Length: 385
Image (cartoon, rainbow, N blue to C red; front, side, top):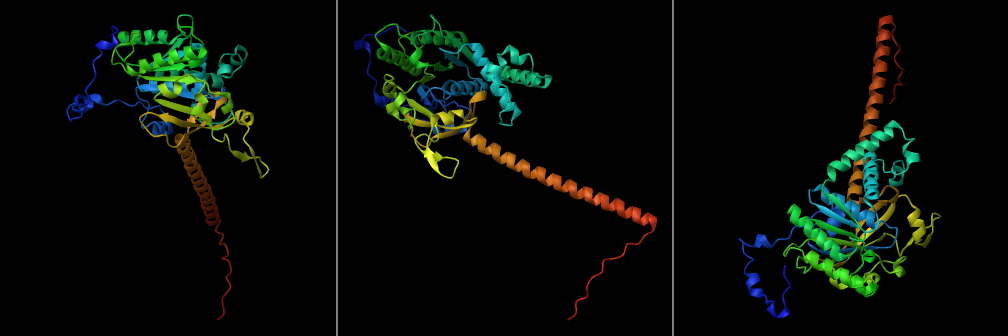
């Protein structure tokens, strides 16, 4: 697409656009929302992610990369291509996380009894595992290969470390595959800029380019009209490590507040609140204690939605050791199913015991009848009126 001078750009008559809102043409203006695979988050987003620029921010070591990777897997399972630009993790590490996550989900115990991504990359550990565990690994690998054929990882490097590099790569993918992908960037603060104007200015430059990419009106090579969902991870202000996240947390992160269409904050569910101290009292929330838990209660808060409301947060349980986020709605369904299964098992055991007792009584009666022994009837007291 050739660049135009500002004088050549023609104003658009809004009245002409409104004419398209008729039964025949309105369908051409719909934008499709793509399910994130997380029912709670889909509710927050009004049905899923849409073309536009979305930013997810959180404190360090809370699972930002893990969350967007799991989201990428969910989208890829729908048959939609996902380009995951990883500025930190290599593809091998990402694959080990995906396999570990699948092993954990397949076991369905939701307890600390599975295989971690680090285990999978440890020669010492893998050389000693049992055949049963090897079967778990092989099953998970098969599941991952089958489900993630549409997930592409692009590793960062000298030739892939700016927003312009990403735009060029996305444009090449669209031309080759003739399909629009979902783009995920991990993460904004690591991207460099060709302008070299300073950290904040460089960040603003990259945000501007990624925003254009999401709108489909980039001057940097993307085919015009190819608006696509772009999701970028961002760090936040350190002052928000122990208090509820707000848009203020992104103030030092360039123009995120103004350029993004959606801003999401990932944080602990109890941050900024008093929590039980285990002794019948209350104490202040401690992030280090929360991070030490096997299952962490976290929420994703909608801080900005350009075309929607910022309502209730989406609840998750984060099993950090196994790189898995369990959606709150799905967890509630699982718990109800487990409770129902417990009742069924209890009833089956009760029926089995009754059947066993009846069988024993029947055998006993047969033996008594065979021996010709008449059992005395129990004496009953006669009531006198």
